[in-house]
Structure formats: structure tokens, C-alpha cells
Amino acid sequence: MRNATKRKREPQHGPQQNKKHSTKSPSRSPANPKPQEEYFEEKRNLEDLWREVFLVGTEWDQLDSVYQYKWNFSNLEDAFEEGGVLHGKRVYLFGCTEPQQVCFKDVEKVIFVPIIVAVVSPFPPSDKIGITSVQRENEEIIPMKQMKMDWIPYMPSKDRSASKHLKLEQVKKYEYCLPYFYHPFKEDELEQSTEVQILFPTEPKPVFGTFDWKFDDLEEFTNAVIQDEELSADQKDAFKEFVKERVREAKKANKEAREARRKAIEEMSEETKAAFENIRFYKFYPVQSPDAPDVSKKCEVINRYYGKAHEYL
View 1: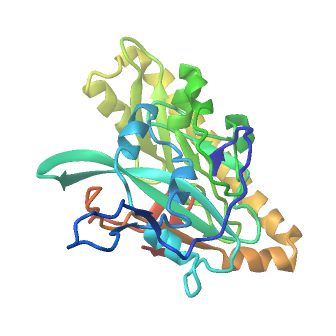
View 2: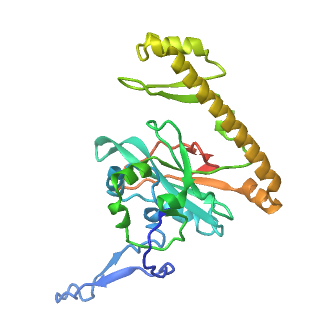
View 3: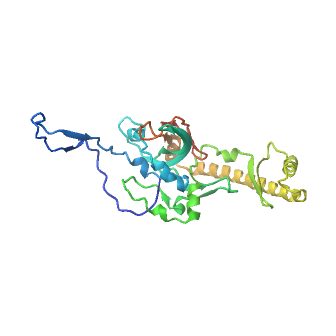
């Protein structure tokens, strides 16, 4: 997945087997009759692949700090080689970051570690993107193209200028993006959830919280909010009605989601069903390198939509 911008494509060449070298001028000293050759490591064919993958949801002002290190994703490169988990398969890539506290050159710091997720699928995982944050009352699921994102064939390129001309509002939306995926054979956690996010508008500040209609009693929940002086007593009835309306909306959305999933399965071809059953997610962390912090903490979770990776490397 990349920010979609028009650019001139350069042809991609296969890996070079020979090492680059430069030849020094031969010494005139009789003790050194032969020229000395200096060898340089050949650049790997897919060494910059991870850099071409958009790091979805990363705060804009943190991107430079991610790219300041020479992260090594040779495990991703090897996965495309013969015997690798991605070899000979149609693969879709997207990136994200995870904040971790690391020690690099004897300095403890919190950094954003780049993560690359590979989706093995005969078709694009989704044409939509999720936009969500703590500040937003409701999440949005919108077309990727609305955020100028798309699944683009990998072609090495150095053009990263397009993202520098975005307005602040657009930048913030990118920071709240989450790669979206909907698996029709797996019940969405939102369909099972009995919780609703509450953001009740009031002065001096809105009331924010989570109400579980299965386990919470509305009267007790409201009294607790008043007791904490987040809500005045004269707003009690309005607040309760607000929560009830949110619960009604959530139950309706859950019902519609279940119905849409059932209908989608009924209308799905056997080929598409097989593709969904065989889809695989692989999560790649950078491998240990002297030029970047060592990443020791790894987990299988990708995000709330994709769930867990089948394997993390």
C-alpha cells in the first residue's frame, strides 16, 4: 500500500551476482607490484522494498525519526526467495509502526519501529481504510482512494514529495488511519461487542466513557458520573436518553452487520470462498542490525480489523 502519486516508473532489474569494486592506482613500490582491489557489498535487490511501503497511521512528524535508522528487513526479502513463505505468491504489503522503548548506542529512548505486513491473497484485501482515534466519537470506514491510497505494483522510486504538500486536516486524518479488512467468515468483534463509546456534549468539558449494556446498569452508571462531578444532576435525564440512543444505534449496526455478512456469504462464489479461507497474514519486524536499534518485543496482533497474523517474523 502506498500513497498514490503519479510518477515516472523505472524498469526493475534482476539482482546482480558480481560484487562492485574499484581499482586503486598500482603502487610504485617494488614490495607492492600488484594493484590492490577494494570490494563493496552489492546492494540487495529488494533492500529498499520496505521504504516503498506506506506506514499507515504513523504520526506525520515521526516519519523522519523512523527513517533515520538503517532498518534491515532481509527477512522480508528472503521470504520472496525460493523456499520463503511469500515465494511465487501474489502478495499485498502495507506498513505501520509500533512504539517501543529500546537501547541504542547506550541510550534508552522510545522510538517508532517500522512493521511490514504481507497479505497473501489472489485479490486486494480491501479497498477501504478505517479512520479512528480516541478523540473521535465514531469510526469511519471510507474508500482508500478518498485518502489517495491504493495498492500499487512495487517499482523502486525515490519520489516522496507528494505527501509534503498536504493540509493539516489531511495530515491528521492520515495519522488516524488503520488498514481495513473484513473477513465474511469470521464474526467481527464489533458484532459481538456490547459496549458503546459515550461522548456527551456538556460544559465545561464533554463526558467521555464506555457503557456496556450487558453488564452496566444505566441508573448506577449515570449516578457515578454525577458523583464524579462530570455531570450536573439537572442533566441526568438527558444523559440517560443519550446513552440509550447510542445503545439502540449500536444494536442496530450489529444486526445490520450480521445480516450483511450472511448475505455476502450466500452470494459468494466457491472460488472467492476458497480465497478467503486460504488468505494469510505475515508480520515482519526488522532483524538485528548494528545500524538500528534491536527490536526484542514482538507480537502477532496487526490491528483491530486484521486481528492476529498467522506468523510473525
